[in-house]
Length: 332
Ligand code: NAD
Ligand code: UFG
Image 1 (cartoon, rainbow, N blue to C red):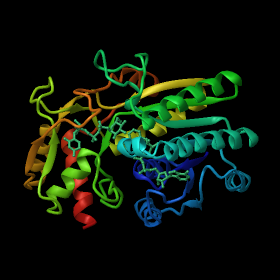
Image 2 (spheres, rainbow, N blue to C red):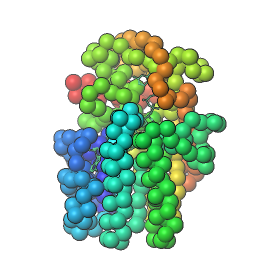
Image 3 (tube, rainbow, N blue to C red):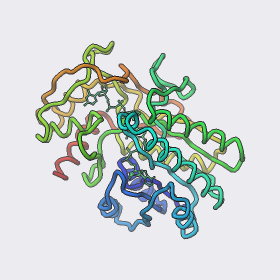
Image 4 (cartoon, rainbow, N blue to C red):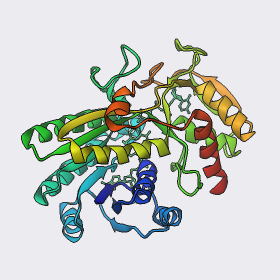
């Protein structure tokens, strides 16, 4: 079985490639290094002791993609390639719509040309908008408040329409909650360029002494300690969910949607305290005003993924905090 992984050098993609290789799949990565670097390939090879087939290029470039599909006999595709920063998407909507939508459409066109109909797509809990009820279930209403979220909603709709158009399509939409942590080797993980938008990479910069303190966005939410609550999931558990999704595609047609989270909600202060405790580090913080667009609480009902995919997150918040810091220490 050969899997094409679009965006396979990125944070979630690289961890998924490791799981695919260790599960016996052949992997072909396509990435343009917009938000990753070439050394990830060596690091994946080191973890798995395997060589990876890699093509550098843009998934929006149809000729490039055709070339990949004509050289490799692809069975299924996992599509991670896209831009993901909410704030940046508000400032640069055209760039976000162009890349996220175009890469998906180009991929779909080329897949159809080459008779490849199995696709796993990276969606996001962002499509639930402001939750009315918790935990979030896949059949709850969806909405968006920023261009990034709209790209996920639009792509979900495109993929539904595509799956209805031809019975050959087998599509799984995975709605990720908040991935954090890193591979236990410390060789791959998350290290964004510039000032991190997300909480865990920011906490890591404080824990490692690079920044003075964490800015906690609001302590007046209706949560246990007033800070935002999220469903953090270890990136390795998330990666394993993709293996289950690929297996599921072999038996199930049309389109299916699954939440990938732990079903547990932790506050920002819980996360800071856990990082301190498991790594024996200091993490000073200051309370700031709320970040516009943030919601109070978000966590998943993962029973559908448990039942249909036979998948459940195994790692806890302490593993996530330990592995995230281990990656930072090994890559200082
Ligand atoms: P990432 O930025 O680390 O990885 C994306 C990879 O895709 C990068 O290596 C980038 O260089 C590549 N890429 C982007 N556009 C490309 C293009 N046109 N052609 C070829 N390569 C391209 O992001 P990630 O955190 O690994 O996220 C992967 C997917 O999961 C994204 O679609 C993201 O929206 C989604 N997602 C992420 C999160 C999260 O918190 N990380 C949460 C929900 C959903
Ligand atoms: N937070 C801080 N300080 C920071 C950064 C974040 O206090 O410096 C807080 C936020 O207010 C929120 C929590 O930490 O309460 C988590 O924030 P993140 O930015 O890490 O994550 P979000 O839940 O806002 O969003 C992330 C991705 C989205 C994705 C969503 C669900 O950025 O793209 O998870 O998967 F849609």
